[in-house]
Length: 328
Image 1: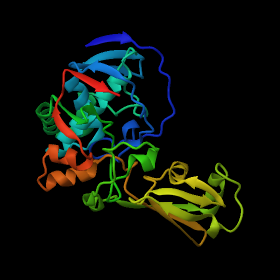
Image 2: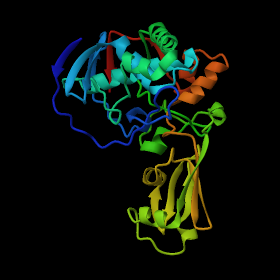
Image 3: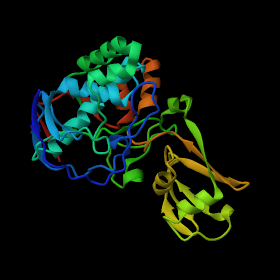
């Protein structure tokens, strides 16, 4: 693998999160939170057989085979115990996203980074095997096979690669890109994902004492009035995400409350009783694009990876990668 020193990264402000691999509680990364770049620059970028990956830990760029990079993303982003067809769908989504980033960074010394707040999570095969323990050989073969069997395929909309974002668990219906990030992308619309309601951590609770809530809310507003009236006038999207609510009389976004209290998603209800605020939270992640848990449930029902991708990304085409990719 070819290595060169990479230039200092300009860290953009993003709010992103992606689940990590098997047997660990998911974490979010840039694709899953995706306060991402929607104004994809006009660029014709050769797809090629490699990606230039900037390792932020040592400030170097490694030219990596596409199959090795996609393996590392799938291993980091989706539990290896998931069905193989779900892993295949993840591989194609990850590859499509990487190609968009490659075009976006055409004038830089790297295509993607290892920073999960900017790009997809990535781990090396050695790191993955250490994480998997005695399942290492089985899981390595499973993911290598999933990547190999989908090599050369991409998700496009009107012949352009899509922003193939994904998340861990939806609320039972995925979210609209426009509702979450204010950008209307025709292939990122609300889609039924009933399998997500079977997830062990589909609904979770987070409790906070009154004084802790008061302290946190001072970052958003002047705290006044009775505690029972701190939160009100909750407005939700079709999928259940809190779009806005009033906090001590001031309108704020559900995303702001999610960030402030470290909630698993912005799809929540809040109640106050006996000096304690309880947030009941549904799903995990921003809810836009492919639900990884939902994809696994579809695979368990016999859906192919192509059917999974066309389920979650509206009006798209799954097909062979062209020699060049036009993004605009």
